[in-house]
Image 1 (cartoon, rainbow, N blue to C red):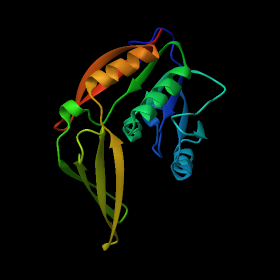
Image 2 (image 1 turned 60 degrees about the horizontal axis):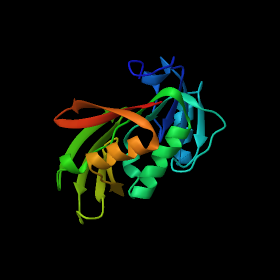
Image 3 (image 1 turned 45 degrees about the horizontal axis):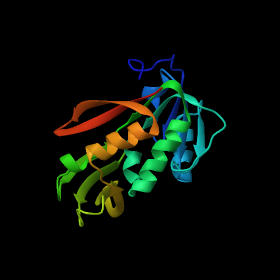
Length: 208
């Protein structure tokens, strides 16, 4: 963000913040988070007492302030229609100061989507063991959507329960991304990075 920003970046809006601890952000920015889930916001507030969190829809939210930087992580993939996707990008743009930077990273694009890809990982803490099994599947290659299903194997002190989540996610070409960002008014740079065996594209978007 600081490399591309045309202004001193002090304030940051984390869109689709979820319930995470923003320790990696609050070292450098005064952070405001926005999310559609009251439960996620309550968790985020517990972990980040010093920052503001707002209930809002990333497609249509309107705050009475603007920010030096905007971050949209994997929440952008929840925009599973072109209209919702474009609306979320416009809303982000309108809350960014001139010369500010938006960082946005899609989970996947059409170019690197892997049909029926299944991944697993696990985590343990204080008698709680969780195994995550994630599968992605594109039932209709013409509709710019794909399905993500996650199965959670949760053992509390050895007792197993199973939970599932399922979402329809947005799946767009790189050209759609580039065109949408440009038409919104951003000058976008593309940066590649790897997480494990997976490669992602981060769009670094400067508001002129």
